[in-house]
Amino acid sequence: MSLLSIRNLEKNKGNTILFSEFSLEVNKGDIVAIKCNNEVGRQIIDMLIGQVSLSNGEIIFKDESLNTNYKKLSRSIGIALLDESFYDRLNLDQYLKFFKRLYAVETDISSLLQQTGLIEKKKIQIKNLTFSEKKRLQVARVILPEPELIIFEEPNQNVDIESKIIIQQIVSNLSKQGKAILITTNYFENAILFTDIVYSLDKEGFKRIEVRDKDDVK
Image (tube, rainbow, N blue to C red; front, side, top):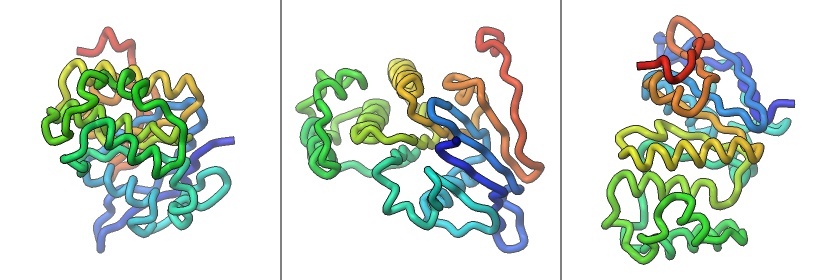
């Protein structure tokens, strides 16, 4: 049984088709990437969490309508958007402990910072981090409550090489743990760094992209 089922989903903006009807199944352990423009990617995410109405179709997570029950189901879903606001005056330890209390979990903060390559920045205020370091902190925040489904919007856009490697490794490990990963990205090259399950979505439709050996991609 799929963890996430997107069935006959489409979105119109006035008389304009933002994207054509598509269906997608995401199972536990899957890493699935949708190559689409940024507007479409954000619309899909907003539709998943009920921020934008569906023009047609349904979104099912664990046998329940996700878009109409997101508040109830949100504990099981982690979302990392391209742009995120932080509590800049907190240090990394304080920031993650805030979410640890919020979710009432027993996650080891030091272990989480170690995974994301931020342990040495533990007592530094967030405002003093680089963009790439903030992106890794975002990943730490998202995986802290151990969600079953993680949704990434452009997870490696504009980050340094170290952060790309760390984020890719974390995503791979999450998949091995049985977590489902859904990625939206405007760039095919970024998608295939994470997975060989890549789809394209535009006005012309939804289709699987054949991914050759990554060593062959220039």
